[in-house]
Image 1 (tube, helix red, strand yellow):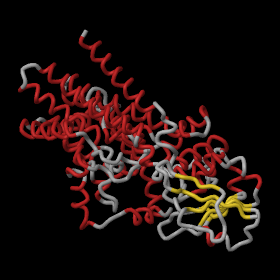
Image 2 (image 1 turned 120 degrees about the vertical axis):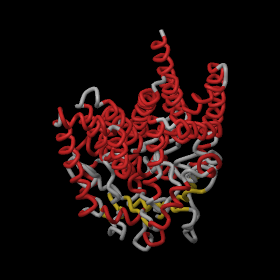
Image 3 (image 1 turned 90 degrees about the vertical axis):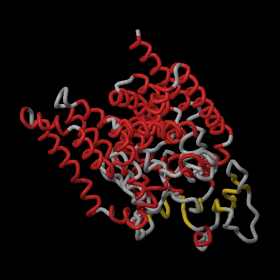
Image 4 (image 1 turned 90 degrees about the horizontal axis):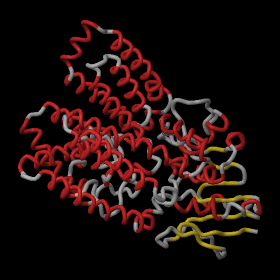
Amino acid sequence: MKFSITNLLLVLITLLFLFTRLYRITDIPPSVYWDEASIGYNGYSIAQTGKDEWGKFLPIHFRAFGEFKLPVYIYATTASVKVFGLNAFSVRLPAVLFSLGVVVLTYFLARKLSDSPTVGLLSSLFVSISPWFFIFSRTGYEATAGLMFYLLAVYFFLKFNRNTWYLLFSVASFILSAYSYNSFRVIIPFTILILIIYRIKDFRGIFRKDILPILLSIIILTLSIIPIFRLYRYDAGVSRLQAVGTTSSTFVKNYLSHISLDFLILHGDKNLRSQQDGFGQMNPAEFLLLLLGALFIIGKKSKFGIFTLLLLLTGPIPAAITKESPHALRVISMIPFVSMISAEGVYYLGKIVKNKYLLNLAIIIIFFGFFLNYFLNFLNVYPVQSSKDWQYGYKKIFTDYKNTFDKYDRVIISDEYAQPYIFALFYQKFDPNRFRQEVVRNSVDQWGFSTVSKFDKFEFGKIGKLLEKNSKNSLVFASKEEMISNLNPLATINFLNGEVAFRVYELK
């Protein structure tokens, strides 16, 4: 009976998760941003031609804007696009499904580590309604795939003493995580070291009786590193590291910024694609439970608890070595372990409070109160607040004016908000073969990034420079900073907060 109730509660948690992620998924956030558009179009190109936008057949690393996107999420989107077509839903659905896997795996991992179904359920619930996880789990972020496979790898590793072949499954999952999101390429070596130390006794037994899974795991892991080495050694991956990397002197400062009150409780990540304005990365109740759970773990010196705490503390490393800190997305691996330790805090309170069932109910009600406020703000305020950050203006150009482009010889579009070409490709479902034949690219910059100058009748760049050419019979979309003298605009395109995104001009 107890097992059935536990499963029922887990199902209810997953249904809550799916409803809050799928509800209005195509229109909140109000448009895809450049990485979503790039992922979607490259998935579309693979589905149509077997090649990416650069013409490479089934690549391991997608060159995209020059930052070399990782393959797992893009190939998942390829399948989604094949079924549902090229649209926001197809790009975001894989993130929902990968994140659902995170919710479920958090339950199983927390239950195994704590030997408590209650801790498992609370951990899963806390992840599903986490302000930190919410936006990432309903938009096209590759990090969700990385997190799911990372948790799966840890879970398999903890089970290998029952069956040594679980070690091979663990390594395969680590590889998929590393080919999903770059942060996991940083933390996986630390995680494997922690796991080996944690299970060192089991390894001694395996070396004596069943070494084959270990040898195969080492071989597969070594082979998987070769494309990564080639990327950073030969294919401009070093330029990408230089673009985002920081110096060792700021590492400690960046690391500590991810465990500060300002980041966790008060203001969160300032990037509106990562967090809503006015919200921290967790609610105050979860923060208090996190502190309580950490104190309980340290005081009890629980082997399971210390293991969870160590995995949490590896989380900020990828962001600490980069320039942008704090950075909620790059430390996404922290989220499930924050939830697990917070659930341990509830467990500890249950030892103090006489009626632990009433305690659990009270905590759940408090968490739901915070989440309801967050969710309603997301539906009603966030789209207006964040439409500029989601490059909403480009969506309006290629959806509202798509039937008028044929009337003009040139369509000139400002690159004020970055990479406009990818929105032209995405929203028009432009033929990949034709794009590869017609595209004219600008020179690659010092960081290895690439921009498109033109394809078909579309031209992208600074409006003043583009209008130096013969501009007769042109439709021009200029940013609010790029006024065209002696000419009145036909219309304006606004962000949802009323701010001007583009002024539309016609040159005859």
